[in-house]
Amino acid sequence: MPPVDIARIAGIVREVAEVEILPRWRNLAADDIGHKAHKGDIVTVADREAELVLARRLTELLPGSVAVGEEAVFADQNVLQRFSGDSPVWVLDPVDGTRAFAEGRPDFDVLVGLVVDGEPVAGWIFAPAENDFYLGEIGSGVVREQAGKEAVRVSAPGRRGIGELSGIVTPQYFLNRKLPDPRPALSQFRGYARHTCAGHNYARVLRGEQDFLINFTTPPWDHLPGLALTRAGGWFHARHDGLPFQPLDPKGGILVAPDPASWQEILDALVPPRVRAGERSAR
Image (cartoon, rainbow, N blue to C red; front, side):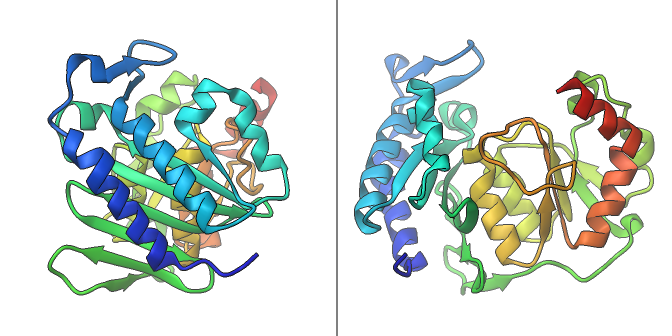
């Protein structure tokens, strides 16, 4: 595969946001908003148009590559099988946090990831309303670009015990799965914050606002861009069973932590081995 210019791709992401997304932010007509699987799962014209343009421009930039976007998969589940092929895969979530976008709030993102041979190798997370961009690739690290500020490199913190860590944890996600309430275990940690949209969750980890992130549901467009970036920055991630993330298996969960040792300590505290055994048997 030829090398990919991550800065050039960042430019494409910015352009698509400026043309297809930001002009529609706080300017959506009633018929610009639709629903997908259920009433709470909304989609806008910005989601659809931005994904089409991103898919076209990125696959043209990297000949032989294919795209897997959230809206394309909703229209045709067979699109997911592109992960099983040999082609590099662009993973797209054109407006992550669609409800926030539709309600006029700024906490939404454009997510792009590149997967090669099943591995996320590069990622881009852009919050266009906040002009906050994270871009990076395995082997080259991660850079944060903000409006009016010099670009800075971000990386995982040094080894610390769980008493010094704060994470992104939503107790209700555990309770919804009939897992033990994690709040007693969370008293061992420095603190925790609840989830927001996927892009903002990963951004909070990348900038050091939170130290770890745990999820149960794992749509590939929500996670592959952030997993590429956190791995490029030195964080460690794996499914709850310790296996690598698998785009075609949405039930394995994911835990991102500063290093393998803290990953194990966090998992043992929040999802003990006996609970993980129950998770596997329920699948």
